[in-house]
Length: 413
Image (cartoon, rainbow, N blue to C red; front, side, top):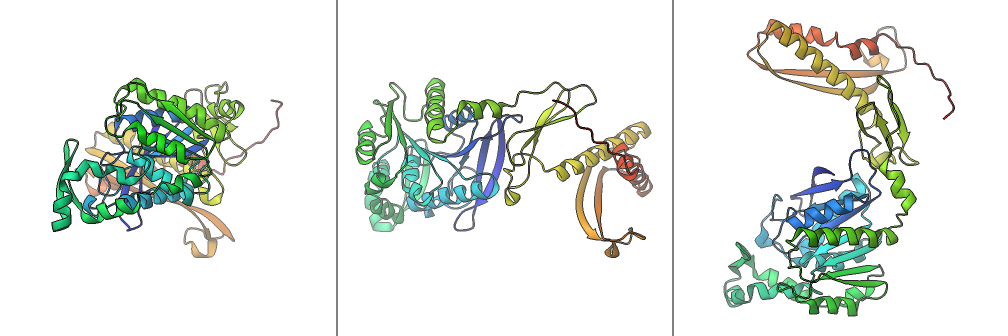
C-alpha cells in the first residue's frame, strides 16, 4: 500500500494533518473513504491503520486525519467539541472531492462513529456508512469526565484524564454534547449502514449498537466482534473488520469483480528499452510500464482526472530534471568537487513568442521550460558556473533541443 501525507484547512482556517492510504502504484483507487477515529485518539491508532490497509488492498483509498487539537493537527483541543469534529469531517470530505474523488464510504470508530452518522446527511455523494464500537449519540462520552462536571460548572474549564492522557476541556464541550443527545438523524440516513460492535466492549456498551440498529432504517446490518476490545488492539480483529467491511461496501459502492480485476493492472510484457502505456479508466488514468518499473499517470481533478499520478507534462519535467541532476553528479564525482547536494526545479509554460527574449524569429505560442538549479557544498563560483554549463549536456536536454522525429505506427494488438 502507499501512504500520502495530506494537509487541509478546517472551518476555522487551521491546518489539519491526514494520511491517504491508497492501493499500490500499479493499482487504481476505485472509491474513496474517510475514517473518523475515536475520542482523543489520533489517525495513527493501530486499528485505523490496519483497517485502512485492508480496504486499500481491495481498491478503496482511505483518508484518516487528526481532528483539531489532536495528533499533528493545529488548534486547541479545549476549544473543540462534537460539532467541530463534524465540521472537520465535512472539510475532509470537501478536500477529497476537490483533490481526488468525493468519498463514497464513511467509517467511524467510537465517537468517530457518532460523528459520521451526524455528518452523513450533509454529504449526499456518500453511498454507505459503517460504525465500529460507536455510541448512538455524542453525549455518551460524558461518562469519561463525570467527575469533572462540578468543576466545569463552577469554573468553566477543567483538566481531565482520559485513558493515559490528560486534556483541558471547557464547559462548552459539555453543552455541545447535550445538544447532540438525540438519535433522530439516524432514521434519516437513507444509506446502507453496517454496525460492528463487541459484546465485551467496556468503553462503549453493546447496548449503544442496539440503539443505532433500532433507530436506523433498512438496509442495515450488524456484525458481532466477539472477544474484541474497544480499540481492536488485536491485529486479527481489526483486519477482520477491514476485510469484512470491504466485501460489504463493494455491493453498495458498486464495485464489481470485473472493475476490481481491471484496477489491479496486470503488467504487460515490456522489452528492455521499451515503455508501454495502458488505459486504467475511460478518462485520463494510465498505467506506465518499463521492463522493471510501473506507476501511474493522470490529470488533476480540475480537468476531469482523478489525480492519482503525475500529468504528462509533469513526467516530461521529471525526466529532464532527473537527467540534469544525474549528469551534474557524474561530472562532480569525476572532478572530485565538494558537491553535497543538488536540487533541480523546473517549470513549463506556453508563452507568446513576442514576450520571449530567447524566441527570436519565432511566432505564436511557444513552449518554455525554465530550469532552476541550486547546489550545496563548499564550491567556488567558477565550479558552480561550470556545473550549470554541464546541465545543458544532459542527454534528455539534448534530445529536446534536437527537434526529435516521432514516428507513429498502427499495430495489431
